[in-house]
Image (cartoon, rainbow, N blue to C red; front, side, top):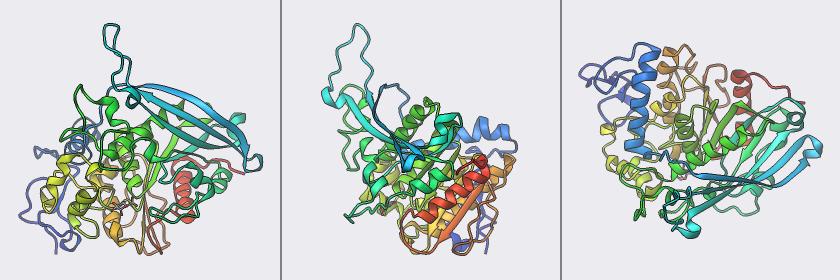
Length: 409
Ligand code: GCU
């Protein structure tokens, strides 16, 4: 049955079985005042800014616009993968800008600066005149675990990434540990938040950024840095992430249109799974265990998802018309794979309005039948919550398809 007649204005009718709360889904193509979004100009000038502001106000919090002072120091630069790659480690440092001539020196002491170590693998060809497209993804457990894996299986488990395979396909990979930008604890005295506090402030306000906002900010700062490197094809930097970092990657791509493509792996609640389904992790569950990820205002929607002014398909829509690739895992029920599929599916009308093909599947595909050709892509694979080599291979397939195949080895 369709939740058709009787829906409030601005609601999209979807099959009743897809949601757990009444009222349909917010329609990405209807403005808050009920005005329909009929043209790309309506989208770019009215609806997109309105949706972005709604995600800031109600979900992730507003990212401050103020500048920080950035330093970059190359720690190491060597040949790797038997000469097929250049491996670079760079330490980025972020400081509160020095207060103007009349101002007091930085009163925050060591808290006035934050450092992140960025590890980059670039195909050797990037150094000889063919800038490489780059996958940029934060990691959970440290750059060394991305390279070498870890014998330690405490959660969240992070397998090593298929750096050689990606480099051989012509892609660079850039990463940093997410904790460098904001340690993942419900505490706002460290990480990048204090760099932006007003005098006397010690935590973000009701509608200000949480940890996901800080991680997304970090992704944009790494992008700034990559864009300065002539070995990087600045027009082809793909932001990707797994789980909480898949949430952050999608939010980063929504905020920062310089990202050419976005990949969400098993991002679940607060990522691309629809909150109104209340399947697996709910707004109540996520805001009680991880309140610091979001703005404080998001917690008010626990158990009241039907009142959320947005839902997560609109996060995918904010990436349009850039390619967005959503990946699920069959056993990852906490992330609600079907809800992730629907997040991709219901973003599609915005892609179509902008002249791009939305998800080329109306039903969830079966496992291992990836939908790569359309600008919104999707796959579900067997197995549990993880970002596997097979997932990475599909991300590269989608990037080949939509950003242009790069000449690997
Ligand atoms: C927890 C959390 C999820 C998150 C996941 C992860 O399971 O509930 O929302 O995506 O951690 O980041 O691995």
